[in-house]
Structure formats: C-alpha cells, structure tokens
Length: 188
Image 1 (cartoon, rainbow, N blue to C red):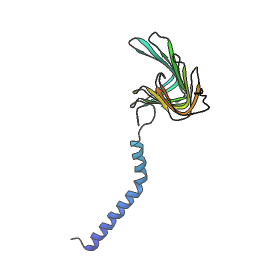
Image 2 (cartoon, rainbow, N blue to C red; image 1 turned 180 degrees about the horizontal axis):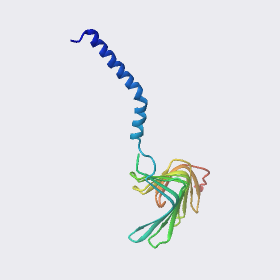
Image 3 (cartoon, rainbow, N blue to C red; image 1 turned 90 degrees about the vertical axis):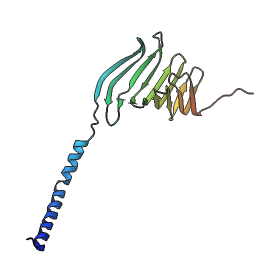
Image 4 (tube, rainbow, N blue to C red; image 1 turned 30 degrees about the vertical axis):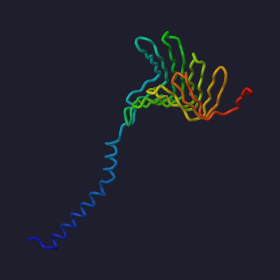
C-alpha cells in the first residue's frame, strides 16, 4: 500500500523530470522544427544568358533577352530577372513595332503582373512614343502598363514630365497623372 509520503515523492520526481525534459530539449526542438518546416526559397529554375522567341500561330510576337532568370515555386510562383531584360515586339508582318527594357523585373506568375524597376523604357515605334520611368507595372491580363512615380513621355510633338501614368500595353492610348512643366497655350 502506498503512503501519502510515497505518492508525494513520486509526483515531485515526475514534475522535476518533466521540467528538466522540457528545458533540456526546447531549444533543439525549435531549431529542428524550423529546419524541417522551412520553406525552400531557392529558385527551382535558373537560366544564364537567356533568349526567348515567343510565337503565336507560327508568327514571332516578341523576343526577350536577359543575362539571368530565376524561377521560384515557393512561397509564391514568380519569375525574377535580377540583371534586367530587353524585349522586342513585332507586328504581323514581322517588323519591329516596339521594345521594352528595365534593369530589374519581377513577374508575379499567378496574377500576370510584372514589376519593372530601374531605367525602365518602353517604346512604340509605330506611334512614335517613348515612356521613361524608374518603376512601372505591366498587367498582362488587362493589357496595360502603369506607374505612380516620376515619368517622362516623349512624342514627336512634346515631352511631358508627370507624377504617374497609365497606358495600353502598346502605348496607343495613355493618360498622364499630375503633369508638371511649362505648357504653352495658343491665345483664344
């Protein structure tokens, strides 16, 4: 038969053993759990000196070149061009109709939005328009480009500096946001 004193001693030993066990492996367990459950953030694909020719129905639509491309699957699907890219767009007769470049690009593959940074220039040679900025977004699904930082729009008739813009992806239609500069108006 167990006495109160024996039961009391067994409970104390059990508590001490539990506390010692918790403190002795808590640090290792957390490190192990973090190591095991850590999401792999390294690229699933890597390309050096990349050149892509994109065609539709056998006709060249655009070519894109980049010194480096990294494709990631986790934590989100995205494609990064850390050293920039250059793209050339073609019309149905395979004549160059425009181009785009940036020092850095990040494509969020799930949303179709591409973030362009650093010396971003987009040109439509047919419409004779060039947009220059340090940051813009290209929404491939809505077929538009836009930005909310300083931008310069250059056409044969004028150069407009502004605080932002939005445009169709081929630059055939555009809106200037917060234009700045001197504007000359003919007298009424």
